[in-house]
Image 1 (tube, rainbow, N blue to C red):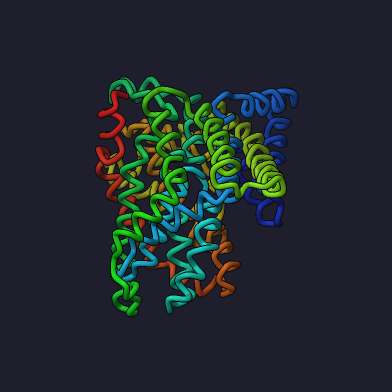
Image 2 (tube, helix red, strand yellow; image 1 turned 60 degrees about the vertical axis):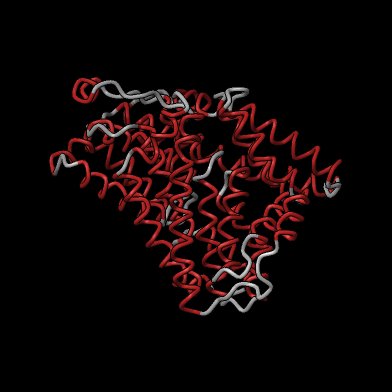
Length: 446
């Protein structure tokens, strides 16, 4: 029975994807066929799906998407980018280094890789081209840095991982062998994402410096100007305060991530409408339209992926996969290597949020069985999928950068390979050294 369900579920899913069906349709149809084969009441499908989109933490998802859209519409993102650029100065590859920092700043509010790439790329790619940077290099560094948007808190994929993992406690046999595992919470995941995000950003800066030096991409001839830096920080003060208010409120315990998302919207509305005065009714409606479209897309995937995952768990399929991996080896470093390469491969072909919802029920039990902390696993998983934004054929960031720079996906993909390679090295370091992810949450008392 188990082998037949695996064949129907995964065979149907992959077959529908192969003929071009949307991922939501592929998930939903393959799951429904499996439900009917098992003789389950189809109403159970709807009940599980409804429960999946009715959780309180999920309210943070559309709110953070709206906050990111409003930031771009109200001029906050442009001011953040100007601050990052003012620090570049004569540094070799300074403009592209400023792009990395700008993606960190913007990612700390939008929580989305494509949104970060679009907001930063619209300003920084033309600016780099004006400074004689190659179009493919300018596009590649922007697409690669845009992936930081899903690692630096508040990250939408970390929210989705937290929601998926909350319903998956550690198996009793894993607890008996490795002791009690810590509980999963979204604030804990946010804090755990900080140091890995900066490590990945640091790896991008190292590769940026090497390539910029090789290609002769110099900084400005004017040198650093303390006055210019101060002026940009003064102009961007309210934009710089946005991540401080949002993340400070979460980590101080003043409000939850869901409440923080509402605070982010209110803060951006006030600053955009009354301080910077760039937020018009037209821009507000465009932001609402963008949020509605993105949220609907995500929720449809969640709706079907949750039922898909529940069916996997109920039929002990994750346990079968875990046993299969552990029969090959129980070396945690080899397990990590297999998991990382598998996630990198999957991230090339599947949308990030769908990947998390589908694979958490499959892979989290494997992590528990070898004693991997769920918070640590979640951070590594999201970091791996962040590389998927800069690798074809899916590579959403590549499409966005291509549209801005007007060059082919193929050229950008080749230019992005060195950044993907050094990001992968950074992910192995994060996986093999758990304290990079776990020290900060422990310091804050989680």
